[in-house]
Image 1: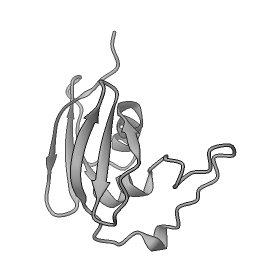
Image 2: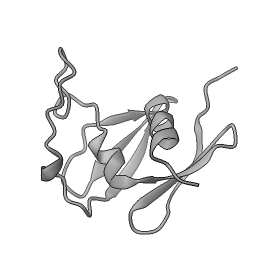
Image 3: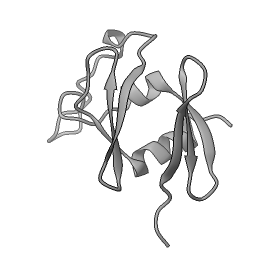
Image 4: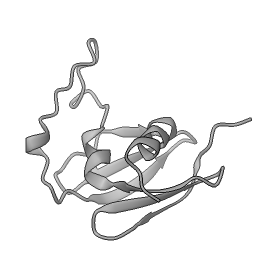
Length: 103
């Protein structure tokens, strides 16, 4: 059975993204939580996994500017704080939706 993938992504209020999944899972995620969870080399040290991103440097009102698909496995999000190098795998987004998402 293939892993669940997003079937729809839409803005939900000023600070949430709603992600609907192929298995019926449907959650609203706080956009700042998504931004803070970036796993790119600028946000996480590659060798140790140590966080490099200082959450205090991410504005409370950060928002996605553009969301693009990356193959069949991830999304790339450009943010209002200028960050645009992170790739958010579907697996990672699903984990977030189960931990911080709301119905």
